Length: 352
Image (cartoon, rainbow, N blue to C red; front, side, top):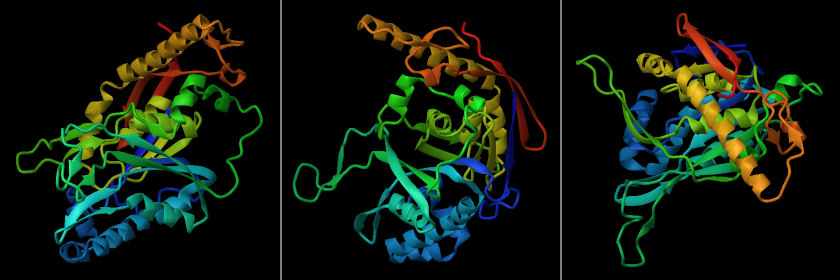
């Protein structure tokens, strides 16, 4: 098996390289409106935003979302009918003109897609552990003017149209893409407490340039990896219109899916290439972890006096449901690059 991964270094407000109704799944995390680290990016897109930030928080908030919506219009165009859109977004808090308030980014995005006939499905909250010892803001221990701390983000899940995606009966790639019963129970919970945000400190190798990004609690690899396994099958194409450091592309590679990414800053590519050097080891590690956790689950299941009814045909270990019997994991063998296009080759994962 091979997968192909293309990266276009341009604005994603015009994704002319992608045909309409051709993308199976979108997994992305855009710049969050009203977070200071993104002010300059939004202001470069619309010069009125910098002025608005000095005058009215919600005026700036609306202008920033208007820029994001140029990309969302393209998302509406390219995703297949029945295809899924997963957007990781956090609400933000900020003081503008001495007024501390919440800016509900997730509501703005949901409203945009609802107005374009997307079906809004239940969202996932993932809670990011905080390093701060103080769980409050404002007046400390004295009521009534303290504020609740904001420690979670949303994974918005939307489907294009009222009809589910159609696949041929007994379509083999679908059954081989199955996840384990216990993974389903964990992944499809509406609250994820087991993922921690990661710190990004990415430096350009040039003394005349400043650091590209320093950001705490960026989404971890396991987040897009889960979503890709939850909402796509082998051979599908995943799009990330806000590619950034390429986490979604790496997750697609590890999952045996194709991918497309858009990013305005081509300097991220060098850091991405560094990450790829450990791709084979990461692939082996993730597969080993999934299998070992499943075998541990089955052993505990048996200790409770229960007997699994089925066996995985490719591996021989027990599984809980018939839908899991064809599950097949792939290990990455190698990858090659040509002009920001990466081709990844795979072999069947064998249990060590």
